[in-house]
Length: 148
Image (cartoon, rainbow, N blue to C red; front, side, top):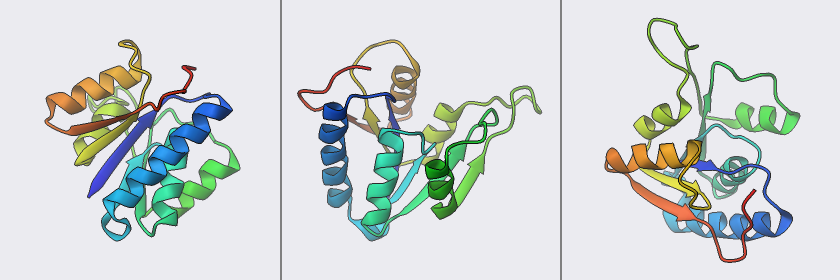
């Protein structure tokens, strides 16, 4: 099972605690050895999910946008543990765009979205694309979470 992850960054400590618990529960439910977590490994929900997948014995794959700048050591360590790293072409290269959301939707069977439900922003666009593609989207936003 290939499961993608997107989510808000810059969440409060209480939101982090609630979301980490829910992500842990979801990873446990998927069954570790067949699970491949796919995402950009960004700080916050994406890296929390990746660590939960690895802690349960699953594998992770990273999507690295062409515009990605050198990142913090924690991101580099997760990237080093990825079974595959998918580097996207820069905008304008052979007509391909730097569209991580579209790449993610094309690589997974399901999507977890740590999302507050606001209709604007990148998360909403990726969720809509995933639903149009027929993917199951699991929205994670436990009671008590605070929008960034």
